[in-house]
Length: 608
Ligand SMILES: Nc1ncnc2c1ncn2[C@@H]1O[C@H](COP(=O)(O)OP(=O)(O)O)[C@@H](O)[C@H]1O
Ligand SMILES: [Mg+2]
Image (cartoon, rainbow, N blue to C red; front, side, top):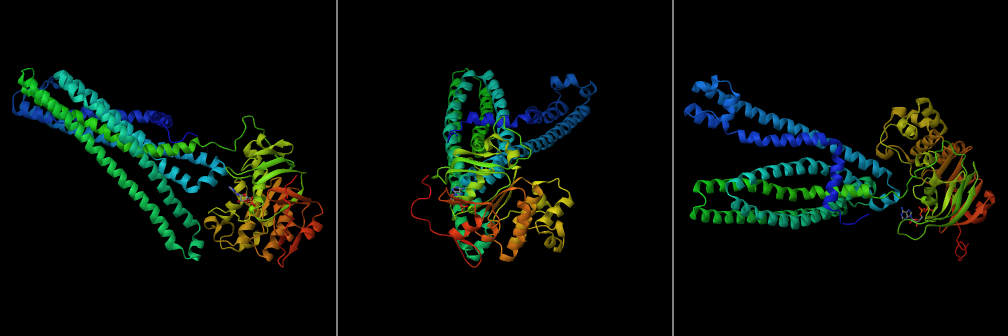
């Protein structure tokens, strides 16, 4: 990925590409904007006709005379009528144009933002966990919710007025040049100066905006973090401290906004000054020309009036460039998200897989999280289909990491993992992940009904299937006891249910998915012994004829495994096939039946 140098050219090019599906709409907006120029020029016409032709006796302007029937030019009354009709028609047209243009702008802008957001969301979901571990959720949220809309400001409110101003600028230059070429040249000499000033300030403003966006992301992440851990914050009574943290970051944002206001102020003063200098020069030369008799006084006055108008679009263009910087900084952030490389990629000719037998083989596999020392080292082990593999080891040994590699949340840094004899990386990701049902220590529920939560992995499942799965998971009884049964809404992340209830819903989800391989990461560690018994019974049914990886610290949960793997310091320290003896051999049990691993000898476990 490139760092701070997203050139404007590339940025505009990407924005235009992004806006391509709406090019007709954008062309429409452009036309409506250009129509404004002649309409504005026509606005004083009725008054002119009323004064010159209805009250006075001058003929109608040539072009009107040609297109109107003769009756209009005969009596002053009919000429007055014509002027009034024109006034109404022109005003009506002006407002209709405004109406159409704002409708079209809103439609195009919103559609653009929606499609851009959808693309970002799609991409973010597919980015690897390493990316999200590193950047955090608020960053992605901010980019999708607050940076993406920039595309509409750039395309609709930025580029279009910019282009229309260019058009009127060219027109006015032409008219001025017809009257006095030298004057026009002098007047235009300010353009390069304006351009230079704009260049300098553009960069400064953009830099400020980029840093404001970062600060604002931090503010958002404080809010998100606190809201998702509100219980802890309240329990520890740290509301004031969090508020301080919030205010501190917010103050940084205020300071940044003030710096931008200051820079914008300087910028405006410089632009105004340059234009004043241009006007002064034109005035000086103009007066000299009048004195020398080259230019009439009337023409000088007219040129000065045109100059005032000429500088209008120039000023708009410079201002727009300043205004656009916030949007461009945002657009750049949004595009950078799309530039993030996917670390877990699917091969082009990846294999499809409908249902695996469930054989897993670790082939001299090592893994390190990005920029960290290795977490897993040289793991080699074969698991034949249908085996129940218990994984034990101290906290931080690398157990969760090991099973995260199975579903390709991360890829091994060395060696490989095979499913049914084929490297995981050779399968289609979707097919591969369909082979696993996962139950974690902290079950994750979504804020919807229990039925939908159970059917999360198989949205097409019928109600009978859902009830069947819930029965197998030992969840049916408590679900039917709830006031709305299967239609009960669970709160955000399932907060309205107890830990054991959530865990059984997660199990039901796994039953319904009916995958050949099962991954259980400490499924019973957060429930009491009584609930554990229910869960273990359900697990027993679930593990039947499936390859199972179960991480646990509890004897009761591990007792029925076929083999135990001991992970120590990221190495496969031992494999026990006589599970009962093994559990006795290396573990001492406390009165809740938890395994306490004994300190191993001081020789490092991974000297293999
Ligand atoms: N996303 C991550 N990024 C960096 N390091 C991590 C990440 N997740 C876990 N680790 C580190 O990897 C090691 C193993 O963690 P983990 O697999 O969760 O251990 P276990 O499940 O055995 O308790 C720990 O030292 C932990 O700090
Ligand atoms: Mg773990």
